[in-house]
Structure formats: structure tokens, C-alpha cells
Image (tube, rainbow, N blue to C red; front, side, top):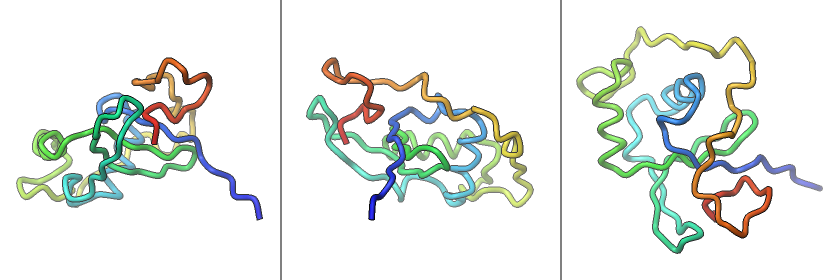
Length: 121
């Protein structure tokens, strides 16, 4: 049986569309830091990232533990304990638009032609 794989995208959290950020919040209502994974990118650097599977893409959202904690601390959608607020409202999910475009993919290796797997994972 053939398995269809989603394009893999590596991005910084602040460069993701708002609706994707909101979906990530729903998947990780208690914060991101405990869910980070590490991998070696195409430059042979160890990178930490938050895995997130969206409808059309598989994301690795680049962040360190410190950045993950800072994002939650500075986000009004999370309370003082780092838990997603009960009154959190999703914005932009009903649109079904093309908010998940991958125009901002970074760290694409020079030898990479059209592959969206930009960090070599």
C-alpha cells in the first residue's frame, strides 16, 4: 500500500499563520517546552523544534526550551500557570483559506531544489 506523506516544513513560531498557531495551542494546551524534539539539520547543527501535524503539512516549529517558555509566558491566551485559558477562542479556522502557504520557509540548503524538507530531517 502506498503511503502519501505530507510536505515537511520547518518554521519559526512567529512566522506561522495565526490559525496554525491557534491549532498548535489547542494541541499543546499546557505549553510547548515538554514536547520539543531534537534533530540534526542539513548544516549538522542540533536543532530543537515542536512537532505539529496540520491538515496539509507536517511542521517542525523551531524553538529552544527557553523560547517555548517565553512564547507561553507572553501569550495572553495562556494563564499565569502556562495553561491555555478556558475562554480561548479560535480565529481563522473556519476560513479554510490558504493560510498555510510555505512562502517563509527558511534554512533551505543550497543543493535543495524544490524539496520543502528544508532542515534536512
